Length: 381
Image (cartoon, rainbow, N blue to C red):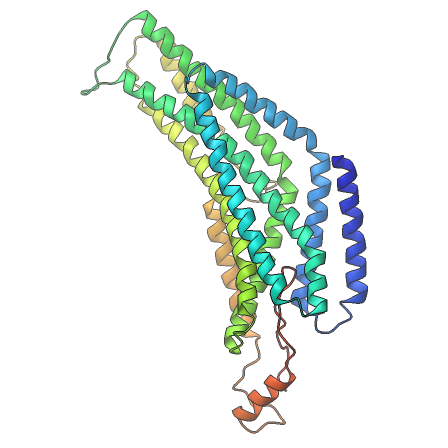
């Protein structure tokens, strides 16, 4: 069924793109650079996501098998594991459902506001499926990372208990007997095994979401840049009537990007804290096995760090979000330099009042949809 549905989507993307290019991009109201660029990257992202999903679908089975193996080991250490997992899935379901409902309401707001424009309604209908697939790909990626983060948090808490067991005030050992050391060694060994499984699972996740997330993030970057440029242009030309649609489009994009990057950052923080706790385990233990085990575990975390990357091009964390914001700001500044100035008199106008009247009478109705950004007058006459 997945293969059939994917093939149907690919055919649909191709047909809709062909019809849209021939029929609607002949319309000068639609065929501006922003709209063509945004429409193209949306369709390309959809196609890349479908193809990659077909290629790596077996990876998802391996991911869940690895998670199940890790869970079996964790159950031997944590008595209330089932309650923790149920609470986790409840919280993640609430978050995902909240985002989906918010997006539906915002998209309904957009379609209601553009319903009287046949061309823009068509463009919205053509691209809403592709944008939905793109956003669900982000949510799927975020879900897998949160699954890892939950397990890393559990073993982090277990390491915190070990640190407390091996230390008292004044750095005195609480007990020195073989039973205590054997139990301690077994627990750290189990934690290390869980970490290894989760680390290998992170590699599978990176391979499963490589090119689709690269295309997704590129689409988000281009779409946000165009939308923010249009927002500035609306404000510049005092056109507040259609500003709300732009806000409706910016919110879902920013939210889903922040969600997936926050998931990565939280998971990475859990792993960093695991390394910190390993260094805080009492090292003056008589059992050399424990000293060697904790040392090797620490070296492993140091030399094999957990990384969420997009096909090796960049790492996904809050640093990437800062870079993305800085890049959008840079391009915005560049684009603004080329905007027409309303205070420059045209050859047929003698004052600002005449210029404003001409602009108002000749500028087409400005609208926006999920698929594209506002129409910006490219020439003031």
